[in-house]
Length: 224
Image 1 (cartoon, rainbow, N blue to C red):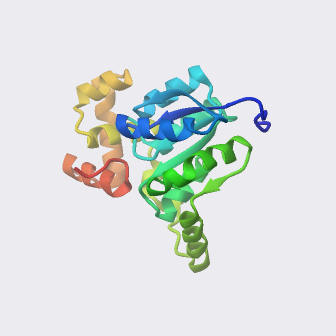
Image 2 (cartoon, rainbow, N blue to C red):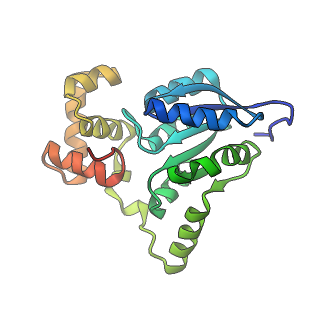
Image 3 (cartoon, helix red, strand yellow):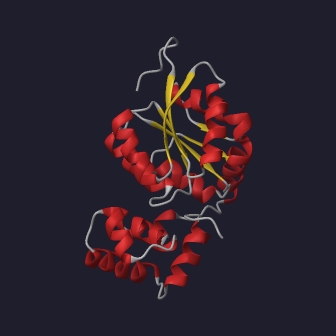
């Protein structure tokens, strides 16, 4: 993607499930005359749909999104529109999350507690073809690389799940029934049951409560 024309505003899609937080992000971004927020999404699936229609320059994506996680949604968005730049927002500074974000194609990663300082700057950095990480994230990644303690994502059973299995996992963890998941994903209840059985086998889980705990530990959902 060529650098943004200096006279053209950077078109941003906000993907964040909390309406008040989204409003705050919108205000921060639109305080910068170079940026225009062209759409908002409250779930990972709706973020994919909005991107296909609006074709934003930059997507500001919360890591923990309902229906489909931020990383999975990012992968789908970039599959359909590889020229889009994705900036991940997260509560988590774990270098393994950072590496996963960049592996799926995100170009930036900032912590939510640094958003007020970093957000507009990060968006403009991505729009002009560069990557961006919050300073604390950069330092953590550097230290982790030095010590060699970064977990090998290839050994993580979660990475062996299909995209659909990841969707089903997250929806189960959010308390959705098989019937509700079938409606949301436009598949049959039997197909949901098959995906559920496969993901549980892959992850070594046996009960719904274990799925919920696993999703919390993974950062796929927020603990209640």
